[in-house]
Length: 114
Length: 115
Image (cartoon, rainbow over all chains, first blue to last red; front, side):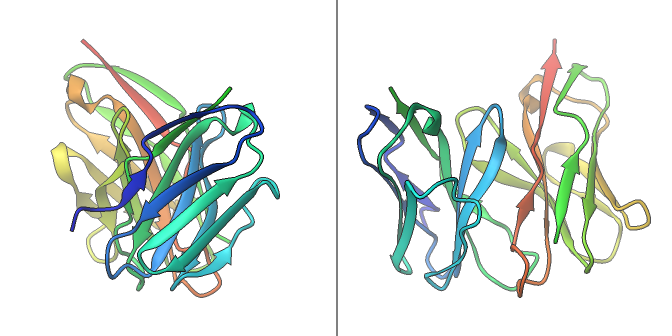
């Protein structure tokens, strides 16, 4: 397996534009997480899914953020409209359920909103 | 609810010196504990984990950690660091999935190894 794949690796967009980040988890993993990382706030959990169903989205900062997982092999995180304070590195991770298992992270998407 | 506290946000240390990165957790149930490492411009990768059994866990790159249930700690140690150990280190806890977030991370500790 190629691991968790995120795209794009880098995204630069203008304030007010819609941004869509993509993630392909490892096949067979039933949990998927979206994290945001900034210098000020560190690593923050935004939302996670179990078997494609959103379980906890309490970390999503505002209604401008939304996430979907239409099937077991694909998830998106959308920001609409984007703002400069959304600039961060966004990570996707997947895990196979059962407790005590390793989370595998993608390489991240570095988002810059100007 | 589970939580993780990493007591130091930054730790500078000279090459070949020992280092300890501190981690405390809170949980009302039995937990599994992890340390992850993040090298610049990369995602996180597993360094070591504690599930059960021996409280001293050995990981990759010469790192080890000790689980202390009474002190609810899981500190990471290395007897002699190298320049290549410069990275950010995250402590994490997971527990039974039902009703709990499967994996909770601390804020991270940035280890800087000085030549």
